[in-house]
Each structure stands twice: as structure tokens, then as C-alpha cells.
Image 1 (spheres, rainbow, N blue to C red):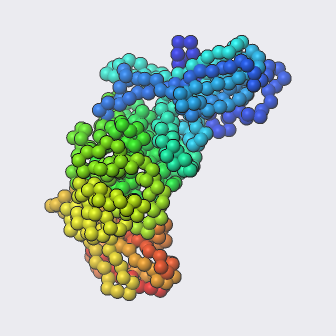
Image 2 (cartoon, one colour):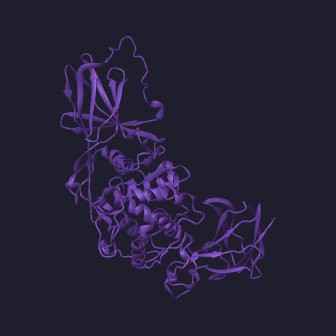
Image 3 (cartoon, one colour):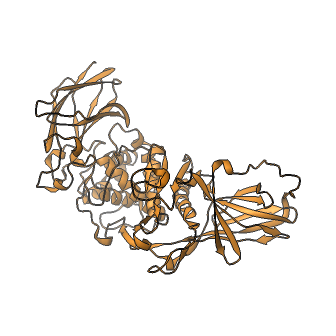
Length: 559
């Protein structure tokens, strides 16, 4: 399938959708009637590859301010125009330059993929059989060394207020590819031994914020899917397009890094600035925001454009959250805004009051790929800061200042021991309860269904991923099997983890009447001496009657 488009005054380009089975093989032999193109000579085909980049201002795409950026590290093939066989291939430089050499006059084409070979990243169309995007030039009759500059246009015509996409959006895949290159290059410079697995980014002009069939573009929102290990990016014009929202792209890539090189215990789900969320989700989303600011430093303005002509949306300063009225309303260990600002202040070289750290990305990556990956605690700001302090003991005082500014107590371990900020509900503390196997039961409380008024938690209970609906417990196993006895007032879920790996899951026990609920006994395999985390949560859609669910959990050894 091909879309024809005038890309420059003297250049006719084709945006090709190429399936993986459609690539010509580099070892193919042209038919006898096709004149060969031989490489290695003195005739050079050179040039610069660029794409249109549309910047965002205050959450709006500024088409009138479109600039050309180099296509960096993109994969390019030299084709014999007679049969499209591949003659040679290369990757462009950081300035977008490419260079092919042939021995004699020939008719050639160039095929420019929205792909990087190292690190391996491919931009593909999830609504067209996961076909890869590529730009194919018309044929050129080369008789001597020639310069062919290639520009991928945005496809936009007119002004911000009255324009439209009248042409193919050729630049879009290359813009997303370049955002990923920005962050991966920055990381490779400071930690060259880090190796990234292949990433596929799914983008289509049909991708819209509706849940359903991703093959027709119903992707819910731009997101990283740990099940496919791929990114899915919105592209529906006049609704929500994210290809030029470079902070959004890197935010989602940040989740890709977590799941492949670090660890995230986030439950996912809906979240917004100012929410009080489960601590693992808050850390994961705060990290995604912070790493996007690190990637484009000093541009710390996270823009998410949407609406008619992409002229709506929002923008927020990721260092101090001062744009468009967004503030850290509920500071704490459950706030993604608090997390993003702490992480960025640890990184950045511009220090304000209360920020005396300028560590860069290196130490942050070391914790993410080291302690955070193997901690027995659920991943959170507590486990991250504890890991950072273990590796850098001299930072404790400055880290405590950053934490205090966000109403987070000094970190003494990965479990949040000593935390005093309850987020407006006393039962949120302690952050992690200790189960003594063979000892007395531990009583905890969580929010259940909607309908209870009063208190800050009124806005959040009934959602499975809030701080009010999640409690954490921990124990150290002493035998090859451990049993938990649970008495509850209403519906719950219980999951057991060892360093992020689930070893037991007990899904919703549906209460069917007002009769006594439980007790329940759950047994699972354990390793003596290993620490385990227990996550108990509730969700509104399965609660019987109680606005608050209480549980008593007792741990014993044996089956």
C-alpha cells in the first residue's frame, strides 16, 4: 500500500507501508534484463535527511513554527530503480547525512525506514498488519556524484487556526523515532554497557482513545503494554495526536525501560496530576514524567496536545508543576508529581531552594537497574531512595531535604518505615505492616465502595489503584511453604510477591450475603530466609455493602 505525496519542489516521495515480508533481500540477484548497480566506486550519492518537527506551546501544536530536524540514525537502503533490489544500506549520521558510492551511472532510489538498527526500534502501523513505515524516493538518474537532500513533510497546510492535514503525515513516524533516539543516546553516553531490547512503536492516523480492537486503532490512550513489550501512540487528527508530543513518547518509553531493565510493580490504570495513587504506580508515572524532562533538558515542559487542529491540551513544567494551574495538591509518597520533581531535582544541574543535588542520570539508572530491580519491597520512592543511599551514603542529608519538601519522611528502608504522611486517612499508615509468622494477626483497613462522604479520600476510594485501596504487608519465610489466614468484612484480593515475581494470587472472593465472610486460608511455596510482600486491595465493582473493608491476616508456616 502506497501513499503518493510531493515532499519538496523537486522531490516526489512515497510513504510506503512495508510488511516484514516485503523487504528486498540484500543478497538478491537482479534479473538479466536489469542493469546492475555496483557499489564501491567514486560516484557518490550523498545528502541530508530531515523531517518536519511541529513544536508544542501551551499544549497546542504550532504548525506555523515548524522546523526541520535531522533524521538521526535511521536505516537507509540504496535500491536499483529497475527492480527495487537492494544494492547497499547504511544508517544516517547525527546530522542526518548519508553516503552511498557506486561505480558507474545508474538509475537508483532511496528507501528510508522509520527504523534504527542500534538500538533496535521500529515504527509500525498497528492498523495495517503491523507494517513498517518507510519513505521511498522516485528514481534518480545518477551520472556523477550527486547531492539528494530528502525532507519528510508534516502534511499540514494552512495556519494553526484554519489549517488541516491535506497531505500524508510522512514526518510523524520519524518524529517518534527521533524522540526515542534522544533518550537512548543520552543513556548510552553515560552508561555505554546498557543494552536495549528491540522496541516496536505502534502508530496510526486511526489510533484513537477508545478501548477495543487495536488492529483498527482502538488503543485507549498512548501507552506501553508490558504484555506485548510495545508502545501504542495516538494519532487521530482533531481528537488526539501524540507523534509530536515528544515528552509523551519518552514517558511511555520510560515504562519500557522499567519493565526490561529495571522493575515496576505498578498496577497501571487511570491517573492524573494531583491524585493519591498506589505507591508503585505513583513512582512509575513520576519516573516516566521525570525521564522525559531528562531526555530533553533544558526543555522541562511536558505538552500533551489534543482537540480540533491539535489546539487543545495541557502543558506542565515537570520541575515545579507551575503551568496551566497544575500543582502538587496532595504531596507525598503517593503523588506522581512529588516523585517526578524529586527525581528531576536529583538529576538536574539547576538547583533551587532545598535542592542541592546534581547527579545526572547515571546514579539514577544504577539504582533502577540494580537495587530497584531486586528489592524485596514493592517498588516505590522508598525503595528507590533507599537504593540510592546505599550506593551514595553522603547524599542522605540532601535527599532528606528533597523528601521533606514533598511531605515524605526520611527514608530508612525500602518499606517506608517511619512515614508520617497518611494522605488524609489514618489507615494508610503504616506503609507496610510486618507479619510475624506464628504470631498475632495483623489488622488492616481499606476503602471499599463509593458513597462515603468526608475527607480527601472521598475522591478516590473505589478505584483499585489508589493509596486508599491498597495495603502492603511483608514477612520473612522460614519454611518451604507459608499459609495466610484471612478474616475479612467484605470483598478483597490478595497477591504475594518475591522480588516482584508473583508466587500467589487470590482473586476476589465474592461476598453474596451479609453473612460472615471467611475465614480463608491461602498456602503458597516459599524459600526460607527470603522476604515476601503481600498486597491486599479492593475495588468498587465487587464490593458487597461496606464502604470500608477490614481484614485480619495471620501467617503461619507449613501447608
